[in-house]
Length: 357
Image 1 (cartoon, rainbow, N blue to C red):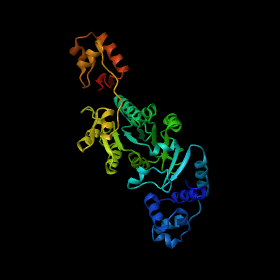
Image 2: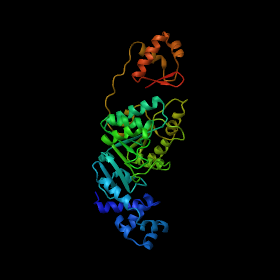
Image 3: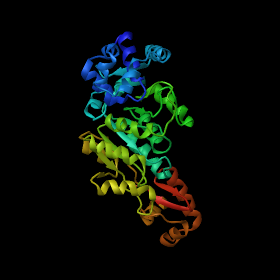
Image 4: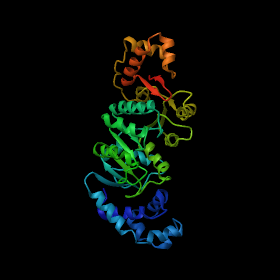
């Protein structure tokens, strides 16, 4: 870990407006550590970066921000990791654009643990949310940390599933690590802070900005061995993460869904492009060469078993189930409730039900 003087120089250089991680690394290549960059002359800097950035580097107006970040990093459970730190995640050094700094809160060692990214729609279906949680928990139980972006929908359930297993979870933020977005995920962020890890490349206090969220996606995939897309529309940001994962040499997995659902079309497009179709967490673990736990016995009996046999896997309503099974409506209603509580079927909009694998 850098001493406070070195860390202050890293932070000061990172706060130069418009510098970006690519030019930051170019300056390191030219001058060595940030402390040497900050001592360079304007003409020397201008040989590496545009003159406007050279002028910005030489400004000394960021003192309070630097002091705030150094104090924050000194608190228990906090860290600012730089490219020069041994604790900087090695897997991020494999991606084309690793950030110069990472602000980390929580269990920092998880950033270097084997991980899988689990992403998907913010407006997921009830079944999509159940899949996200179930897959994440099973993968976490197998020892993988679950990486996601703390968004609503699939991301949130992926984090919860990761926390429920032994591998825990890591949340890559599009804000400062001290800013929770969306606000309704504050309780979840607190859980992750206690038992997982929050990480951001953006300075402390950075508020939500639309351009930051696609940018952080390269870190979600970069920190992981692969990326699982649970549900996604064809224009979903989750597909950006999947494409970045493929570009980074990571495995890409997708869960198929109904041909009638707009939230399955993104996954189906990925599968057509070469993503691996998965129906269970064991499919993912097998591809990654990780041993899986034996699945639980899920044999049904009585009316519930008979109803599952008649349902198939396409959405259907109660009238159709009456016609298929010959069971009275009271029996079907009771069986549907029991099956839904057991997670064997999912209720869909319009009074439809669908069997879950």
